Image (cartoon, rainbow, N blue to C red; front, top):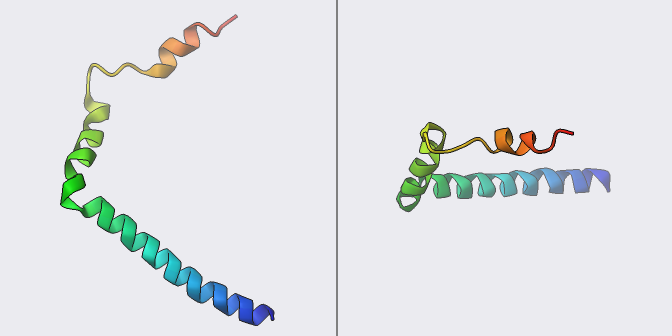
Length: 62
């Protein structure tokens, strides 16, 4: 029984992870999504973005 379940989990687990990986890869490399990822890549370089932790922590000190 254990060997049957183990074999089933190994086979279908591998197939499932390959399908998930291929789906994520296609989504990440799809030309339509390029602008979205380019915008997200520029966020750390923007000057107008303020760090949320700096202003939030000042009010919480007692």
